[in-house]
Image (cartoon, rainbow, N blue to C red; front, side, top):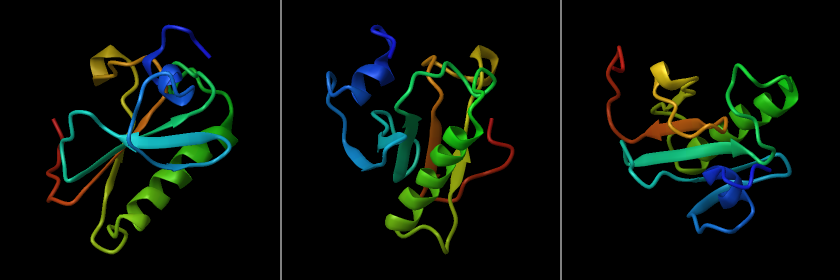
Length: 113
């Protein structure tokens, strides 16, 4: 855990968050600035700065599987949902802790931005 990392502090329970799902490897919580009716972040419990810094395929898979579970549990599996991982500042990553956005509940245009 990184003592100054916002998401590590949420994982540790030091900062409150609306947790929607969790397992041994990751935790999912609502984004504080939602961009869709469903906007949840799924983060690994272990501090990993970014997708490109990740070397644990099982952990990255666990993040993706929990993201899919969040969408299913919220009722969006049939209509569809989007997962997004921003990697680095040019991609819009603002917190240096690997996280996957789960967005659903409205039409999502492509390209995204």
